[in-house]
Image (cartoon, rainbow, N blue to C red; front, side, top):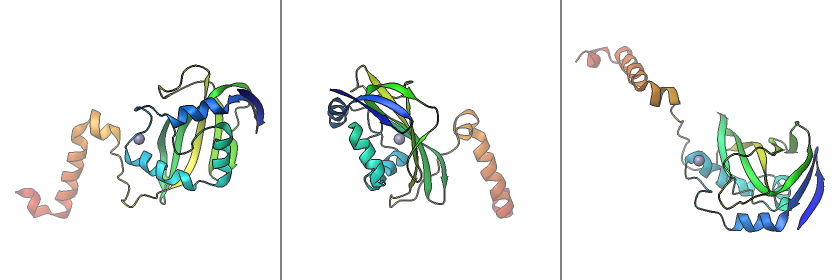
Length: 174
Ligand SMILES: [Zn+2]
């Protein structure tokens, strides 16, 4: 059943029960096993209560984003961007972000990306901008910049060789 609410600077029509059903039956393509995503899933149950209540009200499970990715990592804090999906329609929204709590902003969007196959029609997207601590026991492995790993595979090796030459000039001559 659709209900309509004003949420911050947006007016949303949403179907809480249908969204809850989708989240309780995630498809295999829904969750990811990379380290940054695992950190997000682990941290999500301890998000501020305002954030968890907001997701619950709309029928979404905050621990199951459709997609998250890191925008920056500093001082053990990851700035995540990402998407959640829910059944509904956007009646009205402003482009400004809605602040749920300190470090937790979001915005409704009718353009879609990475929608899990579980969802059929009439879904809308919530874009999130969340600042989340690193909570996993193991340290974060910095992803190798794509320019080094794919397009110019030799650059990294050359850099390493240069460092080695400077530090261990004798070994490098062998
Ligand atoms: Zn991932």
